[in-house]
Image (cartoon, rainbow, N blue to C red; front, side, top):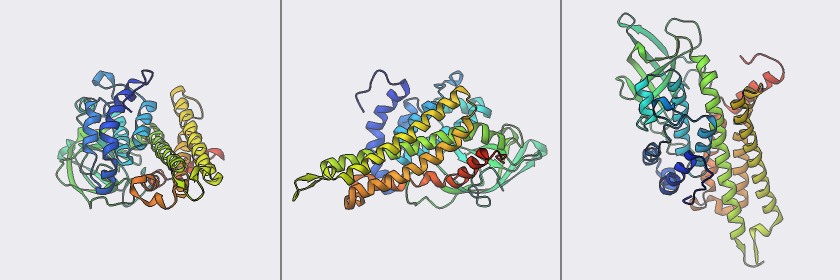
Length: 381
């Protein structure tokens, strides 16, 4: 990663040494211990990459979906936990860029502020667009009180601020968004994350018990949360999540190919790669990964050019990429055989990390319902 092509975009050139020097060396330890990738975030901030999608007017790089997706994909090839934390930071940053205060936007641009989304709830589970949490006007309308039970929040207790959903104060509509600081009294993080994969992403439940905020903490109009989720959050989240899955699949494919080429049956004087079944499985991995990446690139082009099928592609790409990552990492375990169960080979970490995308809202099953509705000419909601 140290020999960076001059043809690379500036953000990927800046990312390469961070991955080589910080992200990749720590990936195994993060997975073993579940420690949050703070060192990687600090390095990404210093490299200007936490402010990648912040507007130039506040000191950011002003990049769009393609750049953010490329960064997440590259990180996922080395460390799924770091990739997921950065992905959720960019998703939250997109909302703050659209509706947030200038001082917070400037801090994000400077790499001095990590954010995330706090949408999913105990009561509505993966149906993130229907929060059960409440917001109540206080102090004559100058303040608001939040009460909530959030089920999963990436970077829980680690982010500087949370893009938080609730029922509206008074307006019609399913939800309203708020910017909740990490030190708000009454904000509580649940049990530490101890999960199957993405071990270092600090994804835990959070609760708000009478959290009082100034009314100015509202992001966008009262009742406008659902529109912001669809128009702002969904495109960013979907393409970056697909990038995460493609990066994970690509990593597993590379590791399986190296294992197959370098592992020998001494009694036959052959490598695993000399077996046509093993070669065919590696080929399937490569083809499926490349196909998912092709759809991802097409989706990014559709977004950038405003193509009529952009929303359909946005819905399709996370579903396809997530299932591809699961299929590819399954094949990687088969190609590597018993060695796949050893931590040092690395594919079992890809196998575990790949499972997350399909259950992150909107889940793969939900996306297929949405895609089917579009295909059948039915309303999306």
